[in-house]
Image 1 (cartoon, rainbow, N blue to C red):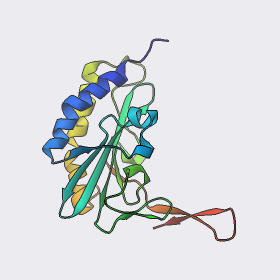
Image 2: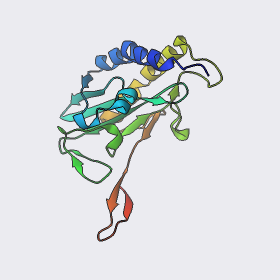
Image 3: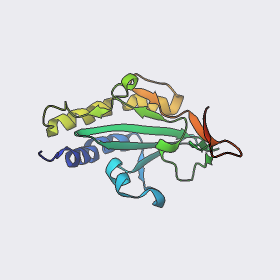
Length: 183
Protein backbone atom coordinates (compact mmCIF):
# COMPACT_ATOMS: atom_id res chain seq x y z
CA UNK A 1 0.00 0.00 0.00
CA UNK A 2 1.53 3.38 -0.98
CA UNK A 3 2.31 5.80 1.81
CA UNK A 4 -0.02 8.80 2.15
CA UNK A 5 1.96 12.00 1.59
CA UNK A 6 -0.95 14.38 2.13
CA UNK A 7 -0.24 15.25 5.79
CA UNK A 8 3.08 17.06 5.18
CA UNK A 9 1.44 18.95 2.30
CA UNK A 10 -1.49 19.84 4.56
CA UNK A 11 0.84 21.15 7.29
CA UNK A 12 2.67 23.31 4.74
CA UNK A 13 -0.59 24.61 3.23
CA UNK A 14 -2.00 25.45 6.66
CA UNK A 15 1.09 27.48 7.50
CA UNK A 16 1.09 29.30 4.13
CA UNK A 17 -2.65 29.92 3.66
CA UNK A 18 -4.66 29.50 6.88
CA UNK A 19 -2.20 30.96 9.38
CA UNK A 20 -1.89 34.33 7.54
CA UNK A 21 -5.71 34.51 7.28
CA UNK A 22 -6.01 33.97 11.04
CA UNK A 23 -3.24 36.46 11.83
CA UNK A 24 -5.10 38.98 9.68
CA UNK A 25 -8.05 38.45 12.06
CA UNK A 26 -5.79 39.34 15.04
CA UNK A 27 -5.06 35.79 16.23
CA UNK A 28 -1.54 35.06 17.44
CA UNK A 29 0.22 31.76 18.12
CA UNK A 30 0.49 30.61 21.72
CA UNK A 31 2.49 27.65 22.91
CA UNK A 32 0.95 24.53 24.38
CA UNK A 33 1.08 23.97 28.11
CA UNK A 34 3.96 21.65 28.94
CA UNK A 35 1.70 18.77 30.02
CA UNK A 36 0.07 18.67 26.55
CA UNK A 37 3.24 18.61 24.47
CA UNK A 38 3.52 15.16 23.00
CA UNK A 39 3.48 13.43 19.63
CA UNK A 40 -0.31 13.55 19.27
CA UNK A 41 -0.39 17.27 20.03
CA UNK A 42 2.27 17.94 17.41
CA UNK A 43 0.49 15.78 14.86
CA UNK A 44 -3.04 17.07 15.40
CA UNK A 45 -2.27 20.71 16.08
CA UNK A 46 0.19 21.88 13.42
CA UNK A 47 -0.41 25.57 14.13
CA UNK A 48 -0.39 25.23 17.94
CA UNK A 49 -3.04 27.22 19.77
CA UNK A 50 -4.13 30.58 18.40
CA UNK A 51 -5.32 33.31 20.77
CA UNK A 52 -7.10 36.63 20.30
CA UNK A 53 -8.30 39.05 22.98
CA UNK A 54 -11.33 41.27 22.36
CA UNK A 55 -13.15 43.22 25.09
CA UNK A 56 -11.51 41.13 27.87
CA UNK A 57 -12.77 37.91 26.23
CA UNK A 58 -10.04 35.44 25.25
CA UNK A 59 -10.72 33.61 21.98
CA UNK A 60 -8.81 30.33 21.66
CA UNK A 61 -8.71 28.43 18.37
CA UNK A 62 -7.02 25.16 17.48
CA UNK A 63 -6.62 23.67 14.02
CA UNK A 64 -6.87 19.92 14.36
CA UNK A 65 -5.54 17.51 11.79
CA UNK A 66 -6.89 13.98 11.98
CA UNK A 67 -4.97 10.83 11.13
CA UNK A 68 -7.37 9.32 8.67
CA UNK A 69 -6.44 7.92 5.29
CA UNK A 70 -6.42 11.41 3.76
CA UNK A 71 -5.87 15.00 4.81
CA UNK A 72 -8.72 15.87 7.19
CA UNK A 73 -9.14 18.76 9.61
CA UNK A 74 -11.52 20.74 11.80
CA UNK A 75 -11.26 23.96 13.77
CA UNK A 76 -12.23 23.94 17.44
CA UNK A 77 -12.60 27.22 19.27
CA UNK A 78 -13.96 28.75 22.46
CA UNK A 79 -14.54 32.21 23.96
CA UNK A 80 -13.29 32.45 27.55
CA UNK A 81 -14.67 35.29 29.73
CA UNK A 82 -12.49 36.88 32.47
CA UNK A 83 -14.22 34.67 35.08
CA UNK A 84 -12.98 31.49 33.37
CA UNK A 85 -14.77 28.55 31.78
CA UNK A 86 -15.92 25.09 32.89
CA UNK A 87 -14.01 22.06 31.69
CA UNK A 88 -15.57 18.63 31.21
CA UNK A 89 -14.90 17.66 34.84
CA UNK A 90 -16.77 20.70 36.18
CA UNK A 91 -13.66 22.61 37.25
CA UNK A 92 -13.35 26.29 36.37
CA UNK A 93 -10.36 26.95 34.13
CA UNK A 94 -9.03 30.50 34.63
CA UNK A 95 -8.57 32.70 31.58
CA UNK A 96 -4.79 32.76 32.10
CA UNK A 97 -4.57 29.00 32.67
CA UNK A 98 -3.94 26.20 30.19
CA UNK A 99 -7.12 25.93 28.12
CA UNK A 100 -7.46 23.71 25.07
CA UNK A 101 -10.81 23.99 23.23
CA UNK A 102 -11.27 20.19 23.30
CA UNK A 103 -11.71 20.18 27.08
CA UNK A 104 -13.70 23.41 27.52
CA UNK A 105 -17.49 23.55 27.73
CA UNK A 106 -19.31 26.00 25.52
CA UNK A 107 -16.87 25.63 22.65
CA UNK A 108 -17.57 25.32 18.95
CA UNK A 109 -16.33 23.25 16.04
CA UNK A 110 -16.12 24.28 12.38
CA UNK A 111 -17.10 21.34 10.16
CA UNK A 112 -17.93 20.87 6.51
CA UNK A 113 -21.29 19.39 7.52
CA UNK A 114 -22.16 19.68 11.23
CA UNK A 115 -25.36 17.63 10.95
CA UNK A 116 -23.39 14.54 10.00
CA UNK A 117 -20.18 15.55 11.82
CA UNK A 118 -18.30 15.61 8.54
CA UNK A 119 -14.82 17.11 8.78
CA UNK A 120 -13.13 19.11 6.05
CA UNK A 121 -11.26 16.62 3.89
CA UNK A 122 -9.11 17.08 0.81
CA UNK A 123 -10.71 14.61 -1.56
CA UNK A 124 -12.59 11.40 -1.92
CA UNK A 125 -11.10 8.23 -0.48
CA UNK A 126 -10.89 6.47 -3.85
CA UNK A 127 -8.59 9.08 -5.43
CA UNK A 128 -5.04 10.03 -4.58
CA UNK A 129 -4.96 13.39 -2.83
CA UNK A 130 -3.04 16.06 -4.71
CA UNK A 131 -1.76 19.42 -3.54
CA UNK A 132 -4.51 21.34 -5.35
CA UNK A 133 -7.16 19.30 -3.47
CA UNK A 134 -5.58 20.29 -0.16
CA UNK A 135 -5.35 23.96 -1.15
CA UNK A 136 -9.02 23.94 -2.18
CA UNK A 137 -9.98 22.43 1.19
CA UNK A 138 -7.97 25.03 3.14
CA UNK A 139 -9.51 27.84 1.06
CA UNK A 140 -12.94 26.42 1.91
CA UNK A 141 -12.01 26.66 5.61
CA UNK A 142 -10.80 30.26 5.10
CA UNK A 143 -14.14 31.13 3.49
CA UNK A 144 -15.88 29.98 6.70
CA UNK A 145 -13.83 32.18 9.06
CA UNK A 146 -16.62 34.79 9.18
CA UNK A 147 -18.79 32.13 10.83
CA UNK A 148 -16.02 31.49 13.37
CA UNK A 149 -15.92 35.22 14.20
CA UNK A 150 -19.72 35.38 14.56
CA UNK A 151 -19.72 32.38 16.92
CA UNK A 152 -16.90 33.75 19.07
CA UNK A 153 -18.22 37.32 19.25
CA UNK A 154 -21.99 36.84 19.35
CA UNK A 155 -22.59 33.12 19.88
CA UNK A 156 -24.24 32.77 16.46
CA UNK A 157 -24.29 29.26 15.03
CA UNK A 158 -23.67 29.37 11.28
CA UNK A 159 -24.25 26.56 8.75
CA UNK A 160 -20.77 25.09 9.37
CA UNK A 161 -20.67 25.53 13.16
CA UNK A 162 -21.53 22.96 15.81
CA UNK A 163 -21.55 23.41 19.60
CA UNK A 164 -18.71 21.28 20.90
CA UNK A 165 -19.41 20.50 24.55
CA UNK A 166 -22.27 21.39 26.86
CA UNK A 167 -21.84 18.90 29.68
CA UNK A 168 -19.68 17.97 32.64
CA UNK A 169 -18.78 14.55 33.99
CA UNK A 170 -19.21 14.39 37.76
CA UNK A 171 -18.35 11.67 40.25
CA UNK A 172 -21.31 10.52 42.34
CA UNK A 173 -20.51 11.03 46.03
CA UNK A 174 -19.61 7.87 47.93
CA UNK A 175 -19.36 5.66 44.83
CA UNK A 176 -17.00 4.90 41.98
CA UNK A 177 -19.66 5.88 39.44
CA UNK A 178 -19.85 9.01 37.31
CA UNK A 179 -22.76 10.95 35.86
CA UNK A 180 -23.00 13.22 32.84
CA UNK A 181 -24.72 16.53 33.55
CA UNK A 182 -25.89 18.77 30.72
CA UNK A 183 -25.25 22.46 31.36
